[in-house]
Amino acid sequence: MTKQAIDKARQEALDRRYMAAALRLSRRNLGLTGTNPSVGTLIVRDDGGGPMIVGRGVTALGGRPHAEAEALAEAGELARGATAYVTLEPCAHHGRTPPCANALIDAGIARVVGGASDPDPRVSGNGYAILRAAGVAVTEGVLAEAAADLMAGYMNRSLRKRPEVILKLALSTDGMIGRRGAGPVLITGEISRREGQMIRAEVAEILFGIHTVLEDNPALTVRLPGLESRSPARIVLDSRLRLPEESKLVAETGRVPLIIATHTDADPERRVVLERHGVRFIGADTVDGRIALPELMEDLGSLGMASVLVEGGAEVARAFLAEDLVDRIILFRGPVEIGEGGIAAPLDEDSIPPGFRLVRTMRFADDYCNEWVRVS
Image 1 (tube, rainbow, N blue to C red):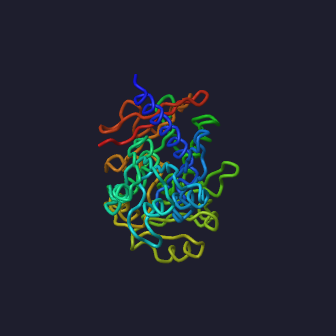
Image 2 (image 1 turned 120 degrees about the horizontal axis):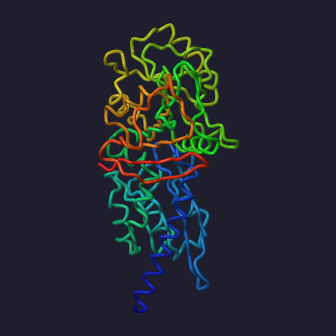
Image 3 (image 1 turned 180 degrees about the horizontal axis):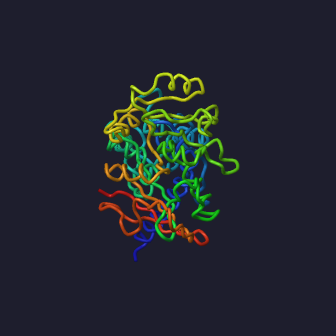
């Protein structure tokens, strides 16, 4: 192998290493950046003693400042002549602040390594074009698939005009997700349940059907110590406004937003009562008394919501699957057998819909977890 080929291989390995680090950094604010994706940026320079990170940035809470601006501010003059690793193509359009592509140029960045391409037509390809026109060296598509996967909510909303829908279920050995009339049933172990809480902590919204809420009276918050503030907004499908004022969901409205998707003609007196407790509403179309999910998802997308975790209820899960609205499926499988009176799961590992690809298989003590994503 020639020296040139060896140097190229080393640079490619180095690029993957720092992009992987930028991706890990980007997870810090997943679900907390509003309509913007959570992007990670690292500024790396080498003055002869080996590469060194001189600036780090992640999209700030609410979506501003962008990751590039945060990393450049930390690097200061050390950014001049350095390389920027950015998990998403730098933005190219003027908003409340100048484009990040221009900010990188003005800071004297010599090279930009990008992860995923931005599907936003205002950006797609334009960010890299601005950089190249200014003489900045650009390497695109480093760990692009992993980057796009972490920003799947943003990507989905840009392409499909609705949030990414993540369906998560815990199945017993006999294919059940609960027992009728029994309230919450523990199917998986403590490690799996904590992993499920981490999934909650990285999404913007969590959705349940009213039947499960009435049966289980869940709070739908993140219960991991230190991560309680990362609880996603709660959305309940409740076409007839049956949610009790005394429920845990209502009790938490002062800390975590609660949104009810209901028919516009639902009981106005009940609505006033719940509004006094801080509950918000989304007027939804109904079909045969059920919330019209495709229209609701479009409405959520127009509100800037990027990711919705569907956790509760076989009926709601089946409805999302029937409407072909699910983009990611996460199935936990525990060693518990439920038996008679069990609620059958709407799908299992052998009945994943066409168009999905298995991307992860994990084991947590006695439990297994598999994850699939939509590829078509």
